[in-house]
Length: 591
Image 1 (cartoon, rainbow, N blue to C red):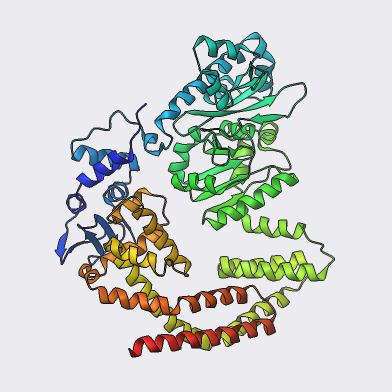
Image 2 (cartoon, rainbow, N blue to C red):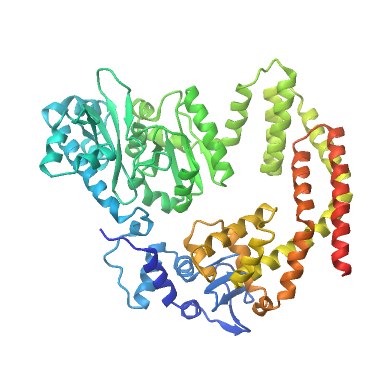
């Protein structure tokens, strides 16, 4: 199978002028160095979409839509990335007929193909052995779970047998050391052994149907119930989802995915018709798993872990990491049964009905945290209620906030009137003590924002300004500007010129991309030729950066303190620091 390289994607993109492509769909008019048109992504009555021929990007300043030439075709025609790429390739005489949809997501090096081929030998043999005499016990085990032949075939379920694997690998002249490197066999005292001997086999594939490894269940005898492939060159359990090869198309279509605890549960969901279901491989949901979900465009996850303590812990951790990465989550309960048991006991219709009644992740989080404290200890309850109230205020709308105030009151025994009074008093305190602080901050933050934006604009237009900043200030204390600076730094490691349209092919926060596009399209390009503007902005940041860092540290400390007296002390320190910053700014303004 051939894979679409980044170089080929770039070639297609660079040969398609964005102005020409967009004007083939809708009328555009030239205005200054850019072009304007009515935005096709909202009910636009005045031209709101800006198109930059220089940067090869588009941006609507009314609805926020933006991207490069590929994303425009993808969003305008409501087709997949691959289909849009194929259309643009045809425009410039490049054929992609030999490629498949998921080829664009392939990151593994071509050198891994040998390892995939070795694992495929295992997959084929194990599938064959399941239907032979020695696999009958495993086959009957699956039948007792109501797993039919079609499902067995779809998931490539097999039986490892004894040492037939060793014989067939030798017959095919496979390098046994490489077979051991990917965990298919073990080598002990120069003896080769099937790593999954006499176990039921669930192969694990990537989105391109390459076998990365195996999950193997014991049927009888001693040993762990399940063993998974060890960490190898091609198998990283911290980023692998079982059944992602079957689930990917539906997941991309619905932007939703179900995550269960094990392979049998995944198969149960699939039998019920929910084929956008996966599970992790003996590990908690990780940041690398999140990257996979985001790459597929998933914005909603339904968790279906077991109801035992381990399952609750896994659900709690998953809810937190999904929330941190702005992915909605909910969870399912199966009457203290695992999904596979529930399906076999209650049938498909009851199973489907149950999956439509998802539960609030925030409610789960509250219940879980209350289960970890001593409810007879008033101090513990008070501390937890105050913590959760802060989370409720930060993350929920007005309706949900008042619902969960009442819910907290119910769980804690602390009156909902007391909780609401605490919220009101807290808001009054912060408002009263921050009035002067906010007035000062508004001016300070405006100055810092202006200077930071100028520096970043200069950096993306000429690498020499990036080099100057890197060798003087070196970073930004503000997290958002620091994230943008880090993107620029990473890009300049491999490029001499900064190409905004290229960012859309990378895993970069959309807020960062939007900021850079807004900055570039709404600025006079020639401004970056005036070094004095850059120098003034650099002096501003240099002058106040150390004080600003201290300000941020104290502000963060203040937010974590509930004691009004201690908080007042920190506010006083902040006011003093802000006076220093103001004096520094006045010195700059008076020059």
